[in-house]
Amino acid sequence: MRPTFIIIIAAVIALGGGIIARHFLLSPVVQTSQATSPSPDFSFPDPSGKARHSAEWQGKIRIINFWATWCPPCIKEIPEFINMQQQYGEKGVQFVGIAIEEREPVAEYLKSIAINYPILIGGDDAVALSQQMGNSINAVPFTVVVNREGQIVHRQPGAFSDEQMLKIITPLLN
Image (cartoon, rainbow, N blue to C red; front, side, top):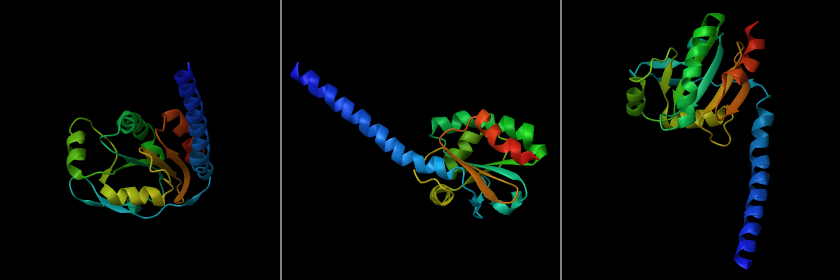
C-alpha cells in the first residue's frame, strides 16, 4: 500500500509541475503571438543552391514555416500548406518553407511530394532566424504570419491548422 501511495503522490506532483511549467513557458508565446514586430530580412539557398531573399515576397502576406523532415507534425501540415498556397496565392498569400536541416534530407523528401511554394535550406542559421522571429521555446514546426507591410502579426509554435490560419489571414486579404 505504501509504494502505491508514494507513486500516486509523485504523479500528482509531476502533473502539477507540468501544468505550472506549461503556463509559464507557453504564456509568453501566446501573448507575443498578438504583438506585431518587423519581420527580419533573410536569405537562404533553395535545394538547387540558388540564393533566395525575403525581399522576393515583399508586399505579400507571407506564411513562413520552419520545419524539418524528421518532424512528423511538420510533414503532416505541408499538404494543407500546398492547398492553401493554391487557393490563396493569387490573392497575395505566399508560403515559404525554411528547413532547419541540411540540403540532402530535404532534397530526398522533395522527391516524394510536389510542393508549390519555395523551400529554403537554412540549417542552424534557420534556427537562429526562428528565434529572432519569436520562437522562444525552439518549437518545430514554427510558423509566422507576416502582413503586406512586413510586420509579423502571428507566431505559431507547433502545428498550424488551415482553420487557425484562415482566422489570421482572412482579415489581411482585404
